[in-house]
Length: 334
Image (cartoon, rainbow, N blue to C red; front, side, top):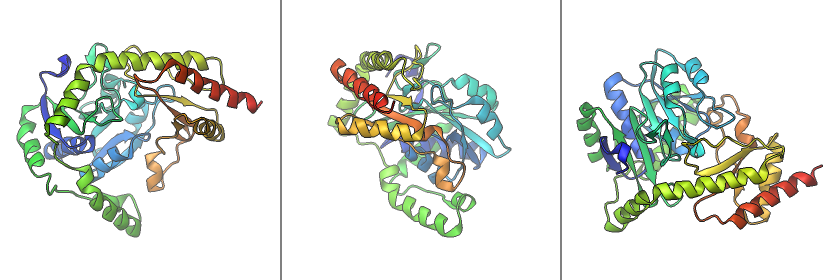
């Protein structure tokens, strides 16, 4: 296991959503159910993990420059019912977990290191920054294979977490919190949908030799692959420099999963995505604001984002082609 994570307790499960559910179940055993603050811009599966664990989501803003949870917004979201803050390294930009901890003193931090695994904050690796942390393994993630891993330090959590892992064939779920978020009919429909999805969201680890070998192989080569991804992202950033697009700062500790840029307007983001797809290049809006599912505020940033595919296999010619298509589309509007 990666050096800075070696001393942590671990629980292996079927996917990252399962690991998040385990983390929140552990929080509930210590502090009771309540609210979880999470980024409004995040994968839907993370929200589903929050709901299945019986918590009420409270959505905080992300920093428009790096897409990570904004500490001031977290402070504004705190209530007596706050039980945890979910901090995600979105698109591989490493969040300042210590700034979030200072904004929410005494509140457990759950670190979502799915997209930033391989990165670090001030010398400490992603996956070692939260009170509980989790990563996931998939062909589209930083490490291939199938599964998820929960990491934690408090040995008193071990027995409860192991009991939940052993109960994954029929996991206990609580969806009463939906009644506080949606009208009765919508809450009932969403609850039915989530119950149907439970076998895919909450599942045990696949211990087959092929799966274990794939995870181990990618784990051992993670550092080199992160360096290659970051290099491609910086190349793309340089090619797009001087355009009307907002280009995120790539920090020294980042482990870029995707290179995500912001257009000045949602219409322009759609226009650029259309041109990229016509050129058979990946470019799309990945995440709508989660709060929109509950009829809450509608984030503007998410509508302006274009998520560009980069990985260690992306060639320099593909990077150049992506930049050329984007810059050409911008010129055509002038």
